[in-house]
Length: 393
Image (cartoon, rainbow, N blue to C red):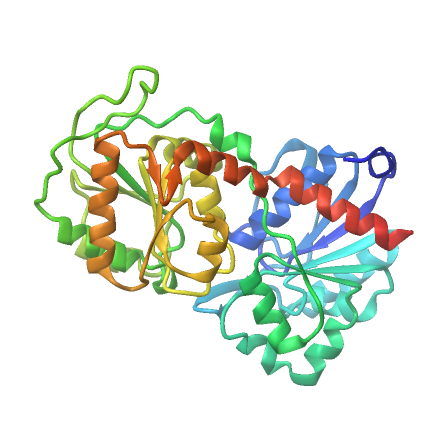
């Protein structure tokens, strides 16, 4: 980072339309960026719906302004926890007008809620980051009003080429693909969770779009198949040790959890973990041998793929543009919604783990770790600092 940028203290309002009390990709990016900016000597304030206590670093304890509680709204094959409170919009506008902010940074700037009001009514320089990928129906439903609102942004960023294509197709304009950020060291330095055999982990919301049902059907197809060799993590200097049968860890929860657990109950082959905290996530990813991300669509980036690569864990993922962009050849990509093809990929991944091949797509786990560093949260914050700095000069 240049001395010029380090020397300037910036006060930045980061506006998030989704509840910070609920896990989500956009919320994670907002919190990570705020922490990185604070570490760089700036003063970020996050405006967002908040539904309960937040588990955040001590440096961010006073960095939040609640714009009301959220309500669940169907969006992009998932559920978006947004605030539709007029009082929340008034509070957000008052905060923006009185806060003496150098820059306003909107994530999903056209999402309904208080942020949209701030986008239209505020005068400070504005940056917008577009995350959504897919058909873009939500953008197009806004019609000319959406294009007019988007023109209020001084700089438009997108987290991937897929997100840029979605936004530009509906709104026009030019965008900088800037990516998402991950705290690489938290995953690369995590203590591996102990395993007794080749272990596959799923991390995500249990809803149709994330493809957990496809993964469980593929896992059932493997059934009684037993690989010739199994692994136990924790002795990389001496090589892998043989033990145990393959296990699937299922992290997270969602609307499909109850139904899927009835069809695929806990067993020696499947462990339902529920929600896990950030430390356990890093440890589980580091301990697992394979991450499986079987989403059906609507994925603009794939942060969990980067987290797995940083943890030196092989990746099997659906062949979606957002995932392919992030993986950069360091993942095995499988046709979406195809349990037979996914079962074949899992079988090969388990075999590779058992033979200690260290493979990951077309490369090695070490190469995947190096690739993941391009998505570091520090690098992301640095790029946004450059954008903010250009706007206030």
